[in-house]
Length: 184
Image (cartoon, rainbow, N blue to C red; front, side, top):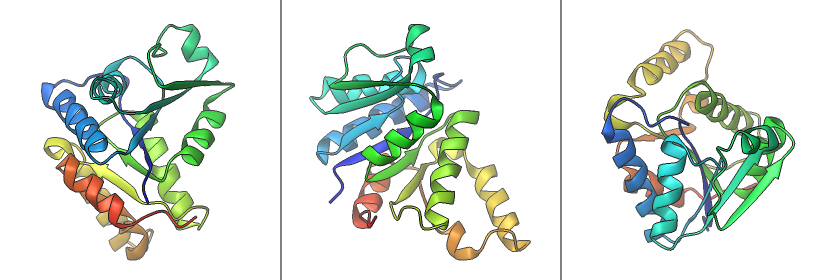
């Protein structure tokens, strides 16, 4: 049973208000399915938007933030629980441990790095938790094209490319992750 999903997303809101709308919609989908949010613990960008929406709707939110970011005053102060950790490595490991699955929303380098780390861990058998990509307004279309290209060129096996569930609708993505519960 999926009890908590880790959401990776931007510390910026992005250029379009549709990204914030999608963050709120994903927050609603989580609360409606009684799934807790695990995320990077920030109060800025899409991170703050999804956390605020889950909290507003009475959901459970766990943040995991490194001391350096907390000291820069980007830590969310109103979460259900907030873990302050030493560094980014500890943050990612704790977030992975607390979650039954992962969703990447639009974001920058950090979001991509977190997404690919979870996909790599799945590929290597370190975990068997579902990994999803919320493709808001085609944000990740080029990335999906690149993954298809890398697969076609023999660098990514088709079964590994298929580890990433891609949806443009938050509710549909949450349902797909729920249908493939974590095994490890």
